[in-house]
Image 1 (cartoon, rainbow, N blue to C red):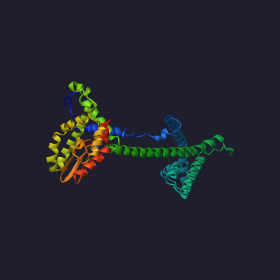
Image 2 (image 1 turned 120 degrees about the horizontal axis):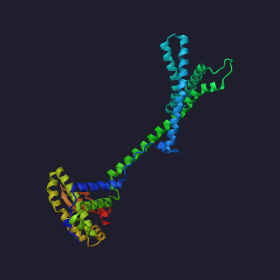
Image 3 (image 1 turned 90 degrees about the horizontal axis):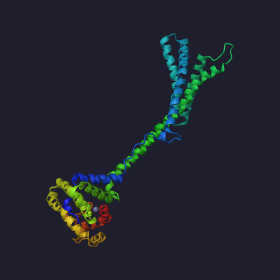
Image 4 (image 1 turned 45 degrees about the horizontal axis):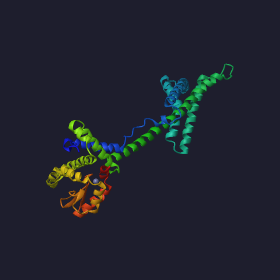
Length: 365
Ligand SMILES: [Zn+2]
């Protein structure tokens, strides 16, 4: 047997930390944010996908530039037929680029985002067709891939019609990709938020978990071991019997009660007069009481208490107190309180609770 007086009890801060530690262990790891699920769901590595999309954007720009220059020329010269003003013609040239090239991209984006019915979709497709027609005809007018003899020049034709078609095609693919990525991010965000809520709930309600007592008792034991890790205390700790460990943990569980008692005292003056003297010797009394009980089996102690509900003996001897006209039973393990109109009812409530008290259960093993 070791000398329990060599062992330092936990401070309030250490007990609070032990409680928080048990709750954290029960709740598990805080869910981490997923970065971009859309990049991880494909068959190929994210780096390959990024290279492909970077090249697609490069081709899009390469197709956009010649097409835009021709469309500018087409738009401004066509305008000059009606209005002979240089500045206006330049503005119209830029507007033509916007209508033809940006229009292609915008109509396909709008198709996915806002066209939720068939008529709207038809309008969007018509818009894509019209803007593509403007781009094709505009390019054709300026490039004029026709020889002096009047015949078509194959390469010139391809070089003329390809840029507007590339803008349309790649714009369409990138748009789909972009929407998919946004969708994936939003979904990941939703999943993460739900996981975070569940984790927070588990953390907040850790004390309702069926395993709570086991985790809390273990956390208290770990804290006691940390607090007594050198000199006489370390030696005393090494020689502790199971029953002494149990009593040490009970001492800390009772100290929790003192903390709660001080809080109650601040709430009502009545509590001050009763709670403080009663808890001053609480730890010693419980050490004594349970040191005796530890010689028998715990199962016996529990059965004994259950069979004698209403009798002032055993582990519940001083668990029921009159306070403010009510009878309050306090669980000696988890310190939960049960207020009833009379002593008998309070004792029965405590006995019923004891069967499911996870802290009492945690102390038994
Ligand atoms: Zn309890």
